[in-house]
Figure 1: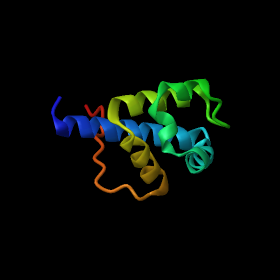
Figure 2: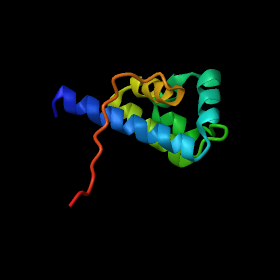
Figure 3: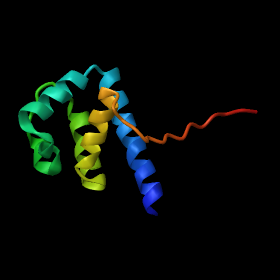
Figure 4: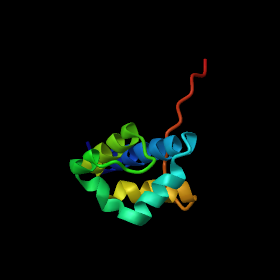
Length: 98
């Protein structure tokens, strides 16, 4: 996988997480968790054993997996997307035109 494809995949995954946070109304809890414990909490699988106030186990697992795959920068990207500060995000939209 080349760098461009890797980055595209990372941004797409970050967008999915941000969308999930908004849809499930966990975005404010996510921000509060980051403020209180720092984004480094997602760096290790040990975070899975923690009860992160208000965040679902499914979300926590997804975040840890993404940090392992893409690095801690993905948390910054998710935050930027949620705050509306994300620039340069390239999303591919597929349609079923016939």
